[in-house]
Length: 493
Image 1 (tube, rainbow, N blue to C red):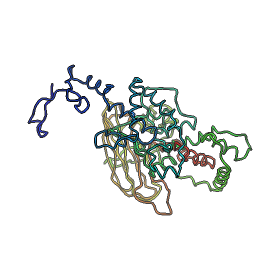
Image 2 (cartoon, rainbow, N blue to C red):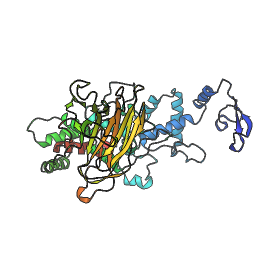
Image 3 (spheres, rainbow, N blue to C red):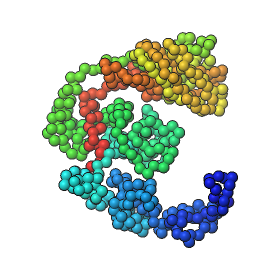
């Protein structure tokens, strides 16, 4: 059906019909209306037509932006009359014409740019040229660029010898989970409604809007992730494990081997001296005192008012991935009660699954989480969060749905416990659930506790017997981490 103009934008006041046709600004005043069906195919053909002066130029500009860090036209999403003119109009026209003549081949375009003298320049500064062209619009040097999130993550996996490049295509994978995938980051699953904070931290473009370019920021959260995340620590340890040198050969050969692997160059004398001094200093640092376990995994029965657990009993058996009553499921005593990194399963009404967190210090905390029950059968599950000091903080029911399990801020004292209780309601049939929670201390820490941990996660912290405290880095692992996170790895010269 042919659309009409809405006078003053009012759909109740239609004006003349508007035939389906291409833009007059591009096609000219003698354009002809589309004739075939809805016109979508003809619109696509008009956009990709060799006579369209914009499509190829816009694409060239964005590819150039990707390679050089700055576009030929400074407004990549606006080629209108009020946009800035291109810095190199002849170059833009040449590449666009060659791109169209070459069958719109992106591979050929990338090859042409990357084999050019402009692309292969060094990024070293030259005061003489910088005085004339400080913004490098004339491309007298290559722009120094920081790796984006995808390239950074792939680089860390590659340096650790873990990057999976054997499989191409297929389903998206979760790269944020504790048991992260080693596939290339381009295959990472993007949840548009709940984009993980990791993506936002590293300037990932919003999946809900058009983004002509990705902006680079430098914020503390990026450094905190690279220093403390299990992913970054795993890559550091794997990097060190594959960098071998003869036994009893001293520190220098290993320092050289790390430099060769990470930077493809040998270290100079100052770098060797700094590395040896760092290792000697770290060897004198006393080992940290192990923390008491923050999490316990058990079961119990709700009291008559459903305000908490009458008695908490720890689950006795760990399979390697989950806590349960014994080697077999269902267990003769506690039935189907299980707890794992993602969630678990409750038992009968008097055997609720309980994940208990113990506060390591006084403070104010808040809880964020999501409870997911995905089965059609059964009557769903009930989730409760109960504080030993503040009482019941929240109660939710999930049946074939997801619910947020966030709480308001509340006070805790050292030794208080917070119970995350999953109850079967009346029937334990089809009651497998996923429940991930984060507990976050709010506010600033006193000076004497600077650097202390402020966040705990049910998934990230899940552990078996005897491994609840994360293993601290050795001096060599710390040194390898320093090199892996250095600017020489993170920036493209």
